[in-house]
Image (tube, rainbow, N blue to C red; front, side, top):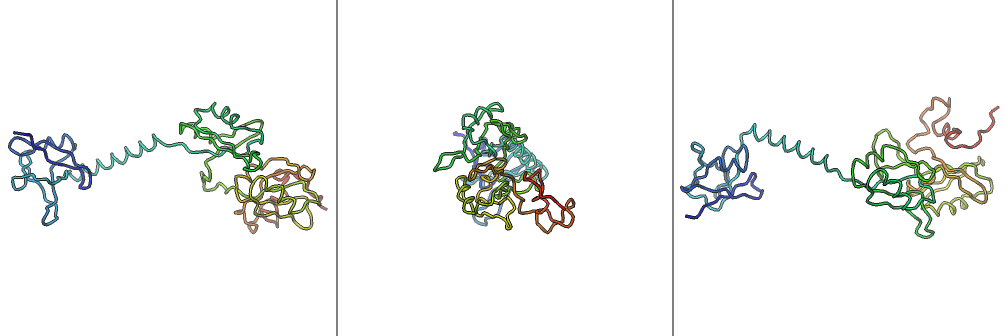
Length: 299
């Protein structure tokens, strides 16, 4: 007599497993529990009523409904407490698996010196771990570096280590971050605006726009009136703005210094304790350490 198998699944919509029956056509509960630990019985959906029905269990032996197992798929039954514990164990295991196999991401490297090549980038970051990819972003027309690039590592631990510190690359401090990351809710959004210090009176908005367009799309140029030896330039891409910060550039034969402009979220109506009667943006405007241009003499 050929061995008979019945189809059993943990849930109705899952792929079933074949469980062997005994010579008399019954199925031992132990045979089911061997494949589905903790099982205490079987149930099936009645084709006519579409209701779930339990399979008769007598002293550890499961008996076929109406003396024939048929071609139905039988679903495993668990004690309620046991099923809940198994679900909790599965959930905990899933979390552990997820943590153990976190994928690495492309990291943006901000503030690269213009001379840095992809080989320089790879040589530097290879000291931390295996590097999958490096890229220095360049202007499509000129081929010049835009001052930032990307790197990706094989191991997640290496990625975490690299993000946690600053990097001296070709004589300049650079930051390595997840693009558009918000690691901390208190961390300000990166500004798309730069402060151009040491400007001269003969520099016009058109001059500045034409010059900075070589690095990326410029959306706005503002020169205060009356003239105060500085200007603001806003880019469409915050990465371009951040890459330029800290640079000394030559515009119309004059050396100008680029630094961070006041972030948008620092509302000018907020009081600034160290600048009585003024505002955060005004105080920052006259902060020598931030913008590095001479302060006017106060009488």
